[in-house]
Image (cartoon, rainbow, N blue to C red; front, side, top):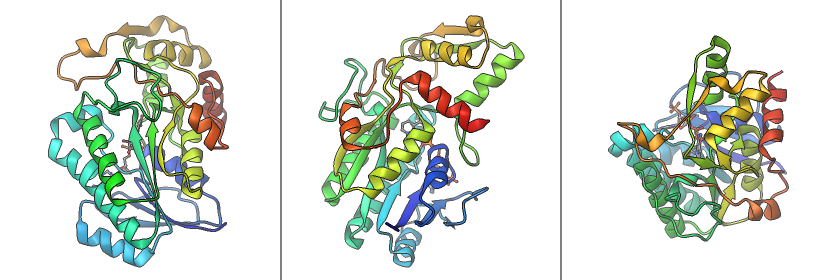
Length: 297
Ligand SMILES: NC(=O)c1ccc[n+]([C@@H]2O[C@H](COP(=O)([O-])OP(=O)(O)OC[C@H]3O[C@@H](n4cnc5c(N)ncnc54)[C@H](OP(=O)(O)O)[C@@H]3O)[C@@H](O)[C@H]2O)c1
C-alpha cells in the first residue's frame, strides 16, 4: 500500500539502497545535507542539517510522514571517537528529537543501530543480550536506543551488522571499492583477523529496512547476514570471488594499531529472529557477494 515515508541519511551508503528499492508508489521524502544523484522519480529531496531543531520540526510539519526511517549518523567509528560532540548531536540527540516528533505525529519509527553496541566478548548476540559498547560510536547508538524506548511506542530498532557492497546510488563508505582497486593495482591490503562480524550486503539491508518500515514489529531486531567470520577471511573470500589471488590480503590485529578507536572482537549478530519476522532472505556471505556483483554488471 502506498506510504509517505521520511528517509534520513539518504545520500549515504545505506540510504542509497533504501531509495533505490523503495516501492514506486511510495512518496519518499529523502533528507541529507548534500544533494542526491540519480534519485528515482518518487523521491523528493530535502537539503537539511538534522541538528537544526526548528528546521527539522518544520520539515515534519510539511511532510507529515507516516513512517520515519532514520538512517543518518556519523557512521565512522574513528571520527566519532575524536569528534564526540558532533557524534552525540547527530547519533543521539537528533535521534531522540526525531523519535519524539514521529511519536507526536503518529508516525512509525525505524532506526539504524549497530553491532558496536556490544563489547565483542561473547559473539552471536541475540536481541535480548545486554549492551556494553567499548567505543564512543557504540555509546552514542546505545544512548539513542534508550531515548527511542522512552519516547516512542511503535519503533523498530534495527541493529545492523557490518555492511558490505557497492553503492547502489551516489557515493558511500564502501571498503569494497578500495579493496578491489588495491587488488587490481597489486597493492597489499591489511585486514583485521580479530574482528568477527556477520556482514550484510547493502541490497539485502535496504530491502529489509523497507520491510520493517512497512510492518508493525516494534522492539530490537538484528539485521545481519547468515555467515559469521573474521574480516580477514571475509576479504580472502571476496578476493577469490573477484578472481584475484589471496596473497595480497594480509592479517592484522586492529586493536594493535595506534590512534584508532577500540574495536570489539566478535560482534556477530544472530539473525534467527529476523528470519522469522521478515520475508527478506538473509544470505550466506557467498550468496551475498553474488547479489552485490550481479547488481553491478
Ligand atoms: N556502514 C556500516 O557498516 C554500518 C554498520 C552498522 C550500522 N550502520 C549504521 O547504518 C546507518 C547508515 O550508515 P552508512 O554506512 O550509510 O553511513 P554514511 O554513508 O556515512 O551516510 C551517513 C548519512 O548520514 C547523513 N548525515 C550525517 N550527518 C547529518 C546531519 N547533521 N544532517 C543530515 N544528515 C546527516 C549523511 O548525509 P550528508 O552528509 O549529505 O548530510 C549521509 O547521508 C548509520 O546509522 C550507521 O550508524 C552502518
